Image (cartoon, rainbow, N blue to C red):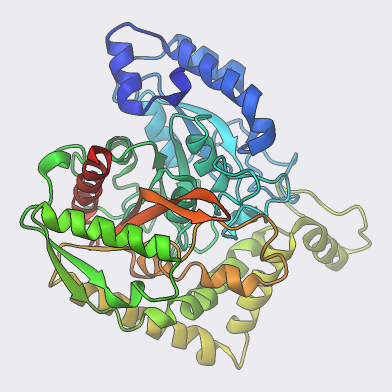
Length: 476
């Protein structure tokens, strides 16, 4: 059962000569063949290439011989990059590697498989994929979350050792919470976005989904760092994030935002967060109630800014280059119109329309500029709080994973579900989801995630608190 192991366990097994990278790939492929027809986490896999890489893997490297699944909006040379959209499906192969892929390869990892997502990363359930449906491994009638639903589901179902996702408004942390795995969004600019198909360029961030906090730290070590190919990449020193992971929380101040523990939470979600707070306090952390007063504006601010940026970024998909073109074409205008009509799904069209509207003459000042000003207030809330505390603790989502199709006719409910995750993206700070127990829904126990947030470039603190909780949880 090599497919069930963590990165740490895989590396230890290689070092001891217990098994090889070929054995791990073979075990994963066997599990995928048996289960993924039901789960639907992968869009494609190049097994032959992965096995060749496994045969020649340098096991002395930090991730030598470790296969990593990749969200299908990150370019991998020679592989399809569909963004789960009809626009790109069968029409585009990546001509280059994203910087994060280059870094994985330099560390000896093996990119293995393209994970499903909401089309162009727009969604919270992976129901918006134009290619296939992904189901939650814990309950096949429920969504895995999104937009990195395939990346979370393959790790949760032991169909991957770890994976990469992208997080624009919670798209790593929310599916990690729903699927019961670890999902980490580093600070904006900490990890290069070069080679990530852009959704909202001031919010997007690549990060890992793993089976443990230690694995998340190991992957962050490889992914983090300045990249001259990304103008938003920060030229700031990185740390070894695996160092000091087990130092605990004694002496740390941890804030609990009062706006995040409302009565609107599912009772078991609230209980899980309160249990974690009590456990960390018992271990020596000082728990402080804090306030993020502009939290109620996070969702409307995000759903002005993100669609505005998406409207601009997705204008490149016009039927002219690297994408499918409509056959119903009589002139240039009909090529644009019909290609975009046929290529984009309903949610992508909805966000393009929203974004185009708020950027249009007469509405730019009323909506877009105002939202930017509110974003500054939200960032200020976090900055002021982190002058008082080392980290924040909060829920990831108000409820566990919902049933497939439950919000099919109510996109607003989907947007509101992002209330606890969007703030970290607007502020550009690191945040992680760590499994924190379960919630009972319809007689079934579904995973619940605990969110830990830290100040900008405070990845090490976030990972330390997350690891402390992980050890306390596993000791129970």
